[in-house]
Length: 280
Length: 324
Image 1 (cartoon, rainbow over the protein chains, first blue to last red):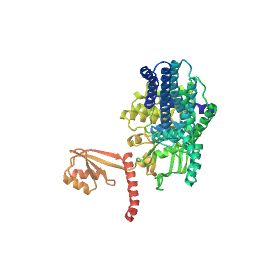
Image 2 (spheres, each protein chain N blue to C red):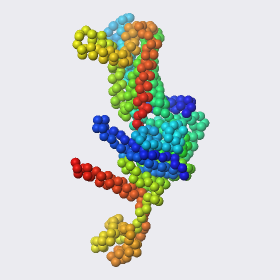
Image 3 (cartoon, one colour):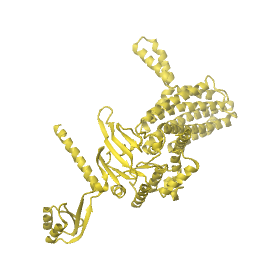
Image 4 (cartoon, rainbow over the protein chains, first blue to last red):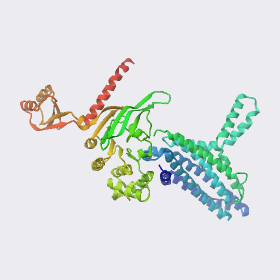
């Protein structure tokens, strides 16, 4: 099979996944809700601040509330959309048998999975861009400056989502229903945000001379090294407390992108391994 | 006539449970030979291993042991082999938001087709399945028969040599079934080989050249319909029969079956001449309405074969049960 033929097949599967994905009612529901929250936050803050404070402080509080609500909405709805899509694309096709018609064609399993994964990423990116764009517009109207910090945050948030998406996708390749991968995706997201605590446990473990304490410390240290640290992609506090056009502080963006790509690739590779011998 | 699909001792075993350690044989030493240009019906009750065999041919699942050769090649996962196979799964789904031609374009792209080539293939397959008139309609508006024809069209996109069809006529109304049957017969006449797995035995009997019946993963019988459907008998349709006449018929092993209150069907046992049977009717004052020769149907053969296999299996299991 030539490279062009192969690429055409992958592209067709990605586009099919995209077209089918954007019509899913759950996705549309999450997206509309998030847009409503982002859009509605501007009105809500206007009412709140009128009744409470005045002058410059009023504008500052108002902006902070908008930022807080919007960042939370993007984070919550974004990850829900990511997990839902990553967990469901492959199991759904097993259930409705589309996978049989596709894999009975001259399409290799790795091509099928690549197409599906690419389709999911297109949906995740499109949703993230749409939500962030509305936030950027809301912030621009309020502060009259281009919120570049928010743009950097959107970029890093995508790589955070990529990690969760790739591992959720890998688990979905072993499952015939989307329930287990969805739960696993949420678990990955929550655990990935708590890895700092593992580091704390590891650091404190040497304080007593108990053997169990030392073992727990080693396990925590190992998990801290293996699990992705999703917190490091989070620019929430900087968005809340810095000026919208400030550069991101204390983060190495190229390193974080590389970190996200490596974990994303590891998850995708795991999916390929699990799917290569899966009995359909 | 060359062999296009051949399985040798094809076996598929699953583990019944993670901890039980028990094995379930989905398919046991299956030997099949499907020849070029024939319609081969692969029959069996639910769970007998038909879909398992098909999935192994398509590399969707993998054999525990044994081998499959398609078009003389063992590398059945290769693109060259897959290009020669069209597959229609049972109850496949096609996205409701796409038009018929868009569904075919998607599948065509999987073959690497594009541009004018793709459009020509889409148009040709739509023509083969008589769906050109509905190519611009959304799948949402398609009837079950139309969806099934689009399914067949996606299987035909690469102009394959072999077509594997899982329940192609199930759920279709009589008219749609007839249309599908005609399409399949035309494809066979064009030289394509068709492997059909179906429960619609009357349909299968009308179009298939050879038949294999499997039960619990094991081959029971296979052959042409002429070879397999050998049992013939004669039936006499008659007016209602008195209890005395019925008793006499039973003595002679003539089975009387009530069609209606006033009419009965007499099954003449093999070995008894028709003249003798008519003579008995005359003696018992049975009014004969018609006399008809009858060949065993595929459905009867199927029921008999599966019944025999089931009884043989119960017989084998009996001593073990008694021992327990």
